[in-house]
Figure 1 (cartoon, rainbow, N blue to C red):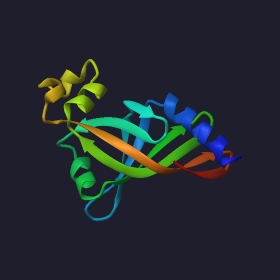
Figure 2 (spheres, rainbow, N blue to C red; figure 1 turned 90 degrees about the vertical axis):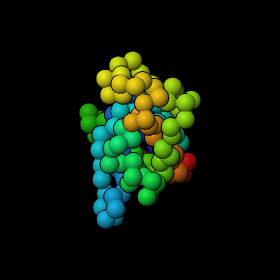
Figure 3 (tube, rainbow, N blue to C red; figure 1 turned 45 degrees about the vertical axis):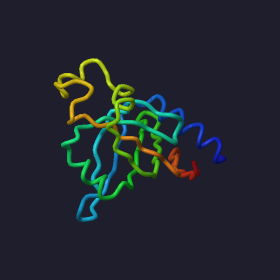
Figure 4 (cartoon, one colour; figure 1 turned 90 degrees about the horizontal axis):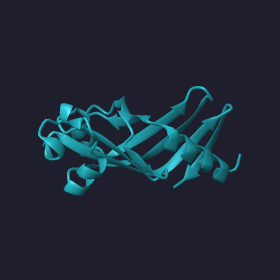
Length: 139
């Protein structure tokens, strides 16, 4: 498989996926992984999530912004891992961009709730897994 074919398959998987795994590093250098709802993606380069500002991942990302994102299609036994960094955004534009109906349940003060943050993951490289093969690609 060529790098371009791997990239195209990876992009299709990321675009159709609603859930991704986000990996961060804790204060002891241990990996932490959790399922996240993908709010949007701009190709494979940028993926946005929302989270509580009070969550454990916020201080982890402030201390070490390196992260990975993993999407999987269990039916086709394929996956992609993206490696990059995360920015924590609390500006009005980012908050409005990712706000969804029903978020009031988690953020009672609305879109400007101090406990509402947007995570912008920016990938620099990726790996596409399928049919027992791994293809690396740069972004």
